[in-house]
Amino acid sequence: MNKQFIFEQIKQKNSYLCVGLDTDLQKIPPHLLKEKDPIFEFNKQIIDATADYCVAYKPNIAFYESMGPAGWESLQKTLDYIPKEFFTIADAKRGDIGNTSKMYAKAFFENMDFDSITVAPYMGEDSVTPFLEFDGKWVILLALTSNKGSKDFQILSTGENKQLFQEVILKSQEWATTDQLMFVVGATKAERFSAIREIAPDNFLLVPGIGAQGGDLEGVSKYGMNDNCGLLVNSSRGIIYASTDKDFGKSASKAAQTVQQEMEKYLNLYL
Image 1: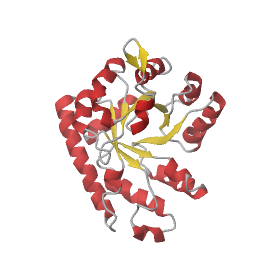
Image 2: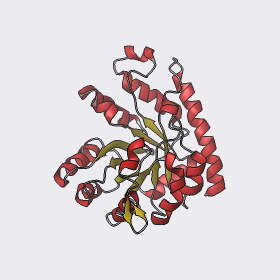
Image 3: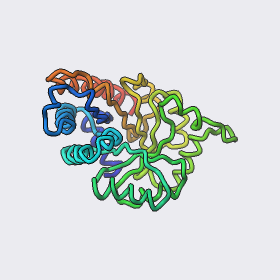
């Protein structure tokens, strides 16, 4: 899936919403627990409810691998259920020495057939490039995250008025084109988007932190959007756990539609 295809989906849906499938057995509606595969049944209904309003789905792999083989089975069934026109993200945050990264890449790109995977850049180029050897697949590199501890390393000064996350963005652009490389930039860092666009004007940005984490969608859109939109903004808890009633799908649909309608406004303003 290339950048132009993603942009066409954004224009068609008037949305750059990514729905995070951070599915937790302890948080899903209780009536689903009687199902043979409650995780997949929940995901299936969420996908059905939100498909009109989003362009991407992002399962957080930890929620599935924590359940062992059954969790991996639920994940694969979920991935198979997502229609092919949606961009799929394995939020796995992998990154290891080259031969290990190659195995991770094979797992998520060949075995499971995700479109993309989140990757931690701390170990450098040889830990990232194995993921870039797969045609049509994307690396989404952690750059500036929205968690409290991001300040421990990501914003450390490296000299010449640069911070570590900026060095990551600049250096990694030597490894791949904008049709293979995205960056994670947290929505709670909206004030940074103008500076990020100065050094990465054409890359897509995956933006978590909207919704339950309090990210500023308007600021992200105003300062982060480029000529191809260039944004995939993720919301997880605010949509998938909008309700725990039996009609939770309706609540998820309404929550996704609310975000989509706001995004449509910003697309008209800033694109």
